[in-house]
Image (cartoon, rainbow, N blue to C red; front, side, top):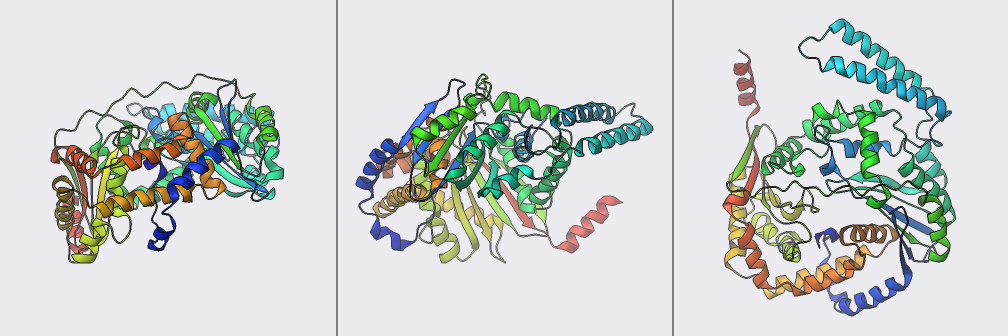
Length: 513
């Protein structure tokens, strides 16, 4: 159920949602009347939900492939392709595609020659390498003559698109925006075109952008580097242990040819769900969607991942010593979202972290005054495959990660030895129901949920059925699950210990001698 991503609710809302359960039952019946699902002959799944409250619609395209699907040696490729999806198509973003296609082919040939010499570490010829690099740069410059920068995004925005964006998680890649309903056919043309006919234009220029993104998010961020090392330590086999944005050495060497192969494998209709929600009628909209999305060539759905993370049998830890804000995080391996106890994990997340009444906030922030922040969350870095239940705390000045660790373990031990209260369990269930209602409140949120649940469960109605799982959670379930995963042998921790700058500088100086 953590696909719903429990959000914080103000206490003032609690009194207004006592009758949520019957309302949700009514909503399900209402949604069934207004929601149409169709699987096209090529395998692509379309969902249309009618909500004529304003003359707009939102869409959500979910490709069931994310960073965990990056090929070995090409981490960051899924994220890279998300960037390339805004570069246009064979008809958008170019002044002359036939000529551009030839120029892009020459770029790939030139890059392959340059890359081969770059990798020739034993007999590399510096002069030859420089010459090949110049040929590659010249080929790039020639291809860029045909590019109309940002035309895809500008065309959408000129026709009223707002919230134009995309994201790549470990589990999937998403594209979304909202638009006036009278521009639905234009959207269908644009979205189907970039799914069926993307062009890897300005690939190496965009690769530089992704590398800079990595430098900002990971390399220049102590916390970013810590989390990256934390995941790499927690996983020994599964791709969840790889950097989602990509390892520097691999980002710097991925090619447009590899991106094209990734698209051919994962961006097949059978691996895509598209939800459209708003002022649309299924009887009129479906034929339009079939017209544009139906011709996308079919392909086999990618094979399921076979790598299974082996059980962890010994505690693992990472310690970073820097002159920066101390930090502590630990994680415990847990099953994926299909596990029967999934809602019990959500209950623990809620009881630990949902607002100022949550246990971690009360204990570490309010009562002991040792932390600025403290939170627990489930399904990290993803939940399509077995992930982690993680807990972190940021110590206040004068306090250490070791103190955070001890305080967190006391709270985990309480979950294992003492039942949660009736009030805590009731608050979790009330907030979960309220969160569902809030997630259905706007077109964009509903489109997201419909696409997500249709992909994960094969039926969007599971969005409502999950409430039965929530209602079934008991105090005994929470205690049982806590004892099952919060074990020392199942724990991986990472921390940043503060080291004074002078001490660090002296250590660096000593290491250089």
